[in-house]
Image 1 (cartoon, rainbow, N blue to C red):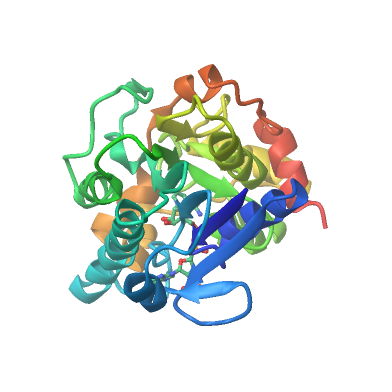
Image 2 (image 1 turned 60 degrees about the vertical axis):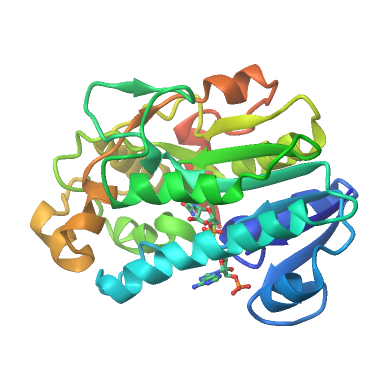
Amino acid sequence: MRVLVGGGTGFVGTALTQLLKAKGHEVTLVSRKPGPGRITWDELASSGLPSCDAAVNLAGENILNPLRRWNEAFQKEVLRSRLETTQTLANAIANAPQPPKAWIIVTGVAYYQPSLTAKYDEDSPGGDFDFFSNLVTKWEAAAKIPGDSTRQVVVRSGVVLGRGGGAIGHMLLPFRLGLGGPIGSGHQFFPWIHIGDLAGILTHALETSRVHGILNGVAPASTTTNAEFARALGAALGRPAFIPVPTSVVQAIFGRERAIMLLEGQKVVPRRTLASGYRYSFPELGTALKEVVAS
Ligand SMILES: NC(=O)c1ccc[n+]([C@@H]2O[C@H](COP(=O)([O-])OP(=O)(O)OC[C@H]3O[C@@H](n4cnc5c(N)ncnc54)[C@H](OP(=O)(O)O)[C@@H]3O)[C@@H](O)[C@H]2O)c1
């Protein structure tokens, strides 16, 4: 299969590209920067879709970059980087003389309203209560293409756990120093997935013609709270993890609105993902974290 991957130079894209190549597929990336094995977004917009069997979009400005202030300019960039790239790929697919068989985007579980009691599967309502849920609604709408010549899949991902990137990249140093702990109250749910499984679900969705629609990209045991996550990460590193990060500190670094992503959470289950026949490599938090922290 020839797969076009927008934003494939990043954390998830690197893992996906490795897995696809290991399975004998060919990968072309769409990037802002030209290079070997890549096309740019401008080339895609002007020349149309290169010949391919499937397309994936993973492009997006890193929302939790602690060095960027949560102001209007950054919010616009967070939106634009996802909506325009998704729209560009969707247009190219819709106008392709030979449309690809599958088209997949990764969005987020921020679609579901944070709650200490609710449990969400792919059919649960959401998408209309704050900046991030609205973002997911607009993002998924931008991906829609008319007709049924191309199978469309949306993977709503939880926090991706993997070596060398993502949220855990920022957490490892304090935890290794024994300075880690829960964020805020620690009671909030912390939906997670191992990067190998997110790449695995995307590959499964690309290869399996019956898979369509929304899939939650979370581990089956991802009904973990943030405090349980902190304890498990401490245990995986053999370090204590008792020092909480106060709510006020998180809000000061990320801004109140963005801090919600860390201070609140959703209990999400991958009902349709499991029903689609996907078998997880890292269903349990302990083994997922051991793999991530192993040097
Ligand atoms: N990591 C997670 O925990 C997580 C959780 C839920 C959802 N997601 C979503 O999954 C997707 C992939 O995540 P990731 O962690 O792999 O992301 P990432 O590594 O931060 O970024 C992926 C790629 O997006 C492109 N990009 C970055 N800023 C951009 C901008 N301003 N305009 C256009 N393109 C831009 C970059 O590609 P080039 O430099 O080559 O252009 C980058 O390599 C993202 O859309 C993210 O929102 C991630």
